Length: 297
Ligand code: FAD
Image 1 (cartoon, protein in one colour):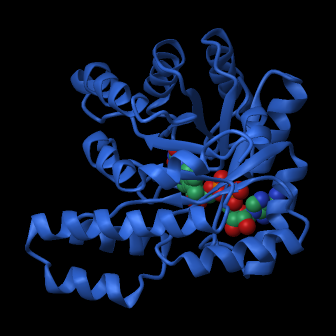
Image 2 (cartoon, rainbow, N blue to C red):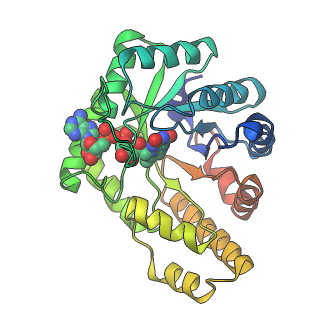
């Protein structure tokens, strides 16, 4: 089923997972993570993809496993930063053969440590989405990424949001946001996007942070704002693993409750493959979530 069809009737709950790096872990570990996540009734589970295509077969295999073994729809990420049309055709053939209908079309990050210039037939995620729809009409639903705190390469928020319109016109049917910690930033971005004519669902992406290095890494990658309270808690309990777990859990629970109270289009959680933590998180918001995700609400 296409996720865009689901979004016409309900707000979606979704989790992002990534293929494990160690080959021998790949399927068994992630299969047990997926089974635990399926018990939380997500509408879809998205599977990341290495920018250079180096997790290609894992991404497709894991998406296929989700399709065959869970109630959730798989959303396969696909990047084009170093792909030819033939590369994309090959991946799409595999997705089609596996019965996967949903693709998160992305450009991907240009890797820092690659010597030779990258060759790609696609400049932007919008080119990838247009290509998929032109070559396989009706076969796939495509979605894309958006950035409440501006994509680092965009000249301004206005320009970044205008580019979202291009992505929408290229056939993308919903956006998932980059992670953020300050909901006000998201609400302002949402208003600006709607004003600029972006009409498709925009699903906030939330990452629970539970350790100091992870928080710093996320700030470096996304340049996201961190509310002073969260920063103070993290500074105070810097070396106390248990305390940081509790703070991360409570902060993210509150963040999700606030988003649900603002009637957002869905909730997407960057799970980092931590099914136990995600189960606790969903347990914390169980009653409100049961109403929020009910069809027709
Ligand atoms: P684009 O949409 O191409 O945007 C990149 C820049 O170009 C932006 O500044 C934008 O404003 C501008 N732009 C966009 N379209 C146009 C246009 N038509 N003309 C001119 N300018 C334009 N990376 C991975 O490697 N693997 C993953 O699985 C992955 N999953 C992700 C999931 C989510 C939800 C998010 C938010 C990010 C993910 N990323 C992933 C990271 C992402 O690939 C990077 O952020 C990358 O730098 C940009 O990708 P994009 O698809 O947003 O690119």
